[in-house]
Amino acid sequence: MWLLALEAGVAMFMLIFIVWWTMFHGRSPERPETPPKNNKKPIEHSKQNSDENPQ
Image (cartoon, rainbow, N blue to C red):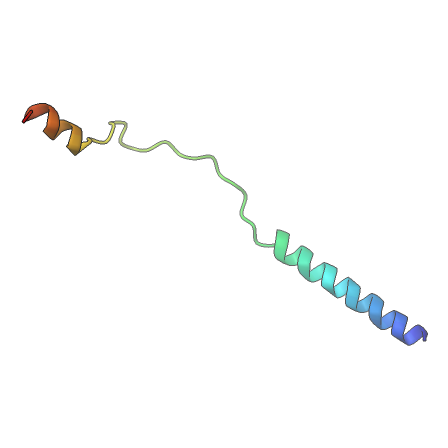
């Protein structure tokens, strides 16, 4: 009977260890976002075309 309890304990430990390992191992630290190199706003072509050529 003690052998079954030992086996169940080892299986529970392995399950918890595998879940912990997959959740936290290999996660890279979050880096703050770097600002874009180009500080200009992107040109919205649809607005430019409609403003220049009202039809």
